Image 1 (cartoon, rainbow, N blue to C red):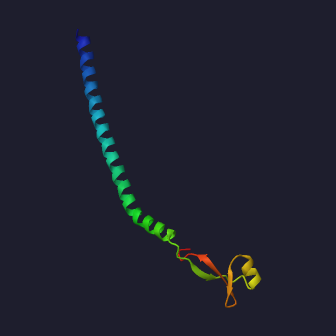
Image 2 (tube, rainbow, N blue to C red):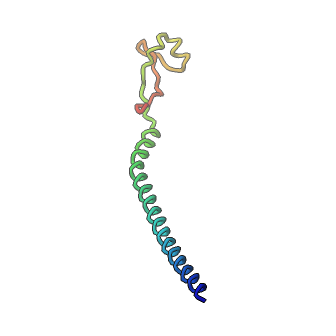
Image 3 (cartoon, helix red, strand yellow):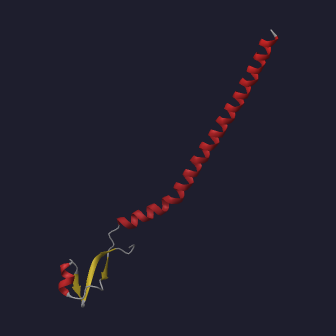
Length: 98
């Protein structure tokens, strides 16, 4: 009988320890989840304005004429589908963000 009682006491202690570990694990997982969510939110808040600015600048069709210095003749210039003006070859496909 004493042997059964000692096993029962050991089992109840082990069960209590397992419950404490289970509660501690749940608490740690919850804290980790909250931390990950907050870090993700902060990262998105930090990056979002930059992305919006970049996308709006990229979607704009504000092209500027740019002189192409290595094309020195009208025929070379027009062959590459650019236009010749003021003895220079000009390209209108360059964006200021480039």
